[in-house]
Length: 59
Image: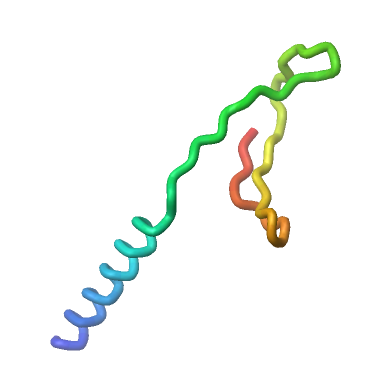
């Protein structure tokens, strides 16, 4: 029973420190064509600068 309590405490601490350590950023913008008109149904992907892994993709 004590091991389960300690394990739950370690998991809780890991989750709390992991989520609070990450800064929160907001990226806004508009996808346009060459005539500066907005594009419907554009796919936008945020990539990591280090190794180009996908961080977030929206459409």
